[in-house]
Each structure stands twice: as C-alpha cells, then as structure tokens.
Image (cartoon, rainbow, N blue to C red; front, side):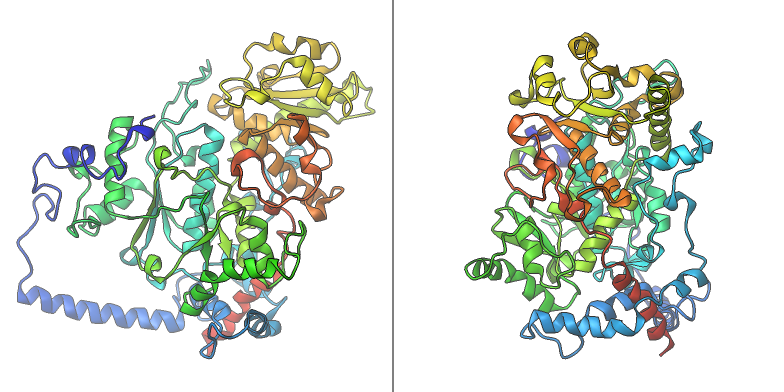
Length: 639
C-alpha cells in the first residue's frame, strides 16, 4: 500500500496533476456546461421552489400518506427524536444534569411499554433475516442447527430509531449530508474494525455513508480455490449485509461511490475546501470499481479536497455526540472532561463496574476515556458541513484502528446502548458465511458424539496466530502453547484450531494429546464457498468452543471474544451480567491469560489489543425507554 508515502494533505502534486490535464476541465466548470440563467428561468425556479417548500411543510405536519413509516398516525421520525432529546424551551446549560434527565424521563413515562401497536400497525414485525438464521438457500445445515450461530437479536423498535442529529433535509437526495472514508490499509480485522467505526459515525451524525469502490484488500484474493474464479477486488458489501441493514433500519443510509459522484460531484455540488471553487471528479469519472492503488490515491485526494476532513486521532481525543442539536448540549459535553477530573478528587469513578443506565455520563466517560485529554465534540460547525471525511494516513497516525465503542461517546446512555445493539444485531457477517460456519460446527458436534458414543458434543477451540504477526512475544513454539493451556483442557478431547500456519506439522506434538481439527478437514462443507470467507468462518467456528484460547494483540482473536461476549448475553452464561467470560483465555502471553474473566475498562495503551466487556455488557437495557419515542411520535403527529 502507498498510504505512508502520501504527502500530508494529498491535495497537491499527484491529485492535481491527475485531475487537471486542462485547468478549466474540473474546477468550477463541468465539461459542456452552459453559460448561466436568464430572468425567465430564475422566475420559474422561484415558483418551483415555493411550491416545493409548501409540499415539504405539509409533509412535516401530516407525514407522507404513501409511506408505511410516515402516515397520518406517524410523523417523520426525526421530529419524535427531537422531542425526546430536547430539554424544551426552558432548558439551558445551567440546569443540572440530573434535572435535565428527569425532564426527559417525565415526558416519556406515559408512553413506556406502548410501542408494540405502532410496530404491528406498520407491518414491521419480526424480520426472518433479523430474527434468526435460515440456511436453506446456502446448503444447510438444518434450521435448528443453524440457530447455534445466532447471537443477534431482533428488536423491531430499535429499527425505528434515528439519530437526534439527523437533519430532515436528508430525507431527499438534494439535502443529504454525507460521510466518506478511506478503508484501513491493514489486515482484514483491522479493516473491519475501522469500517465498524465509520458506520457508527455516519449513523451517530445522521449522515449518508458513501461506500468506497471495490479495491484490493490486504491478504484477500490471494488464496486459490479450484471451485471458483478468484476475485481480487472487494467492497464491504461482499462480507456484510449492508443493503439489508439500510432496509431494516431508518437510521442507516448508504449509497455507492458511483452514485455519490453522479449526484453530487458531477452536479457541481462539491467545493474545494481551500479554493472555494466547484471541483468535479478527476477526469469526470464516476465509476472507480476495480481501481489500482495509483487511481485510488487520485480518488482519495479528491475526496479530501472537497470534504471537511476531520483529524480525529483515536489516541488523542474521544468523539462525543450531544443528545440533541441544541447548543446547551454541546456546551455540556465540552466541559465534561474537566468535570470528570474534578469528580475524581471526591468520588471513586474508577470502579470497573458501573450502571450502564446511569443518567450521569461521568461514569461512562471514565470507562472509555482511556487517558485521552479531550473530547472531539460534534458541534454545530461540523454538523453544518455537507460532507465530512475520514482518511487513513499512517504517517500522521490518522487511522481508525479502534473499536467503535471506544471511539464514540454519547451524552445520552440510551443512544450509546442502541448503537452497541445496532452493531451486534445488524453489522454481522453475511448469511452465506454464517451458514458455512454452522455446517462445520454441526459436523464437529456430530464427530464428538461419535467419538464419545453420544455422551458429549462439546469441543474446544484455539486461534493460533503465526504468519506475519509483528509481536515477537506471541511467537512461541508449540510446546509453550501446550504448557500454557493444559490446565484447562482434557486429554483426548476434540480441539478445533483456527490458524494461519500453513505447515500443520507444527501442531504434531499437540496432536499426540488432543483430537485436532482444522478448517482444511471440512472441504465438503466448504464446497463452492468463496475462499476469501475462510478466515471469517474460522472466527465463527472458534466462537462456539466450550473453552477458547486466543492470541494476545490479535484483532482476529479479539473479534472472536466479542462474539463470545454476545453469545454470553443470549445464553445467560456464568458472569454475563458483569461482562465476564470465564471460559475464554489467551495462550500467550501468560500475564494476560485470564484477563477476559473480569470486567475492565478500555485501556488506551492499545485499543486494538483486545476487546472490552463494555461492548456487550448490559446493552439490552433501555430498549423500552428508547421505544417510547415511537409512541410519542404518534401523539405528536396528531396534534
């Protein structure tokens, strides 16, 4: 990748040279543009504008009669969200937090528990895709066997939530506000981690996410599979149900890069941030799928030019989102870090455990601040930007190598828990991947039953990281792995190992003790499965082990642990109330072997080193409170 070699702003040299073969081609004038507007056209435009404004006013008060989510009983979602989050006309930054929260809760009390009628009326009942896993179209396994993989929940009221910062203008293409981003340049799980953060940011901001074009991803597309023609260019749609997410959730809007450039770039709606002049896409090109690194550098240079590129360094500041667009909420957040420091002198805010539904955000802030000195508040200035952009710049440490829950802080605890549920319930691997893993898990359980004459069906799992891993302390020999894990395992038991070690003889000493299985042993279950899914399938299979051992510092292991955390909530396993995973270990390093057995707050020394219990602990609280917004929406629309 060329990330580290790019200049600081990338809006000089290469991008400009490639964009401007003719200085008048792409700046301020589109190819073939006309000369201007005459008086008649201006008059017609003014009349059309007034007519459109009138229709929009009618829509704001009465809703859209043809929209199942916006009929005469249901005003647009953003109005209800505004009513819910605003402190009212008398609210100011001088009102104590406790009183402000009391005002919000008092407004909601009459409506709590009354949201199901609205959901049923709109026909938004349990979605088969959201509620479970059906593998009929993917080669099995049976419906019952597939349900083992399901850690997500179907919460219809959650699908109606919209960020309080969502602008009503965004209902139409002409009023959209966007978030563009550059995918991370590391391995798959680093790419996934950054993608989770950018999707969460777009939803929190109420912006339409622009999906990057298909391009090469590090280590993907390198594996050969006799059953398929190998692909080399990918986008996130290939791994996650992005379209389904947009259909199932009012809060999430997404378009392709091609659509974005056609609707905004080629229509002269994007302006160079330095010159103030309209800037069209390089070479007036809108389709960038399948680009090489050189073309990608040109495209992202353009995106940086025409966007407010936010320099939010995950290690230095924590992005914070107010509970409304009101200035007093912005002011409240801006002073929160100082309040936390003051509170530390009088109260114990360093307790690992706290109530996730505590209205006082101080405790939640103390849990994830992780040594950062400042909050990057999403204030009015940024809210008014048409496009914000997040770059991947290794040289300037502008890289979203951070978990979404450690990078977004919400003033309102209900919004924070909703976001964590949104990622859990919707941003998961595609059903084709889930079903392939389910077939293997089912096969392993059958294998164990056969070996134990039907007495057992449990198996243990490992993720052993080898390959190009840069952390030398994790590069241990097989005998060290055996010694570090033998106390928790039973000789002769079945152990599934996910690994990037190509030479399986490395595990021969372990084979003498345990019944070892690898992904390679399930070729029949993987027929016609895209080989680029193999690593993701390894993760899902590993998450179902009775005992799991992973590798410290590995984001691959980290995601397995988070999935196990999600399962612990659904299965109500021992310690789930406190976010504890007593059957999850690290085989290396010894000092970190049992860190998942107790709750710990986010550590800023390396956000990516591990996953943290705050991502799954107690996240199903607040559903009823948040769902009350939908009932309030009904009442408001009838006034």
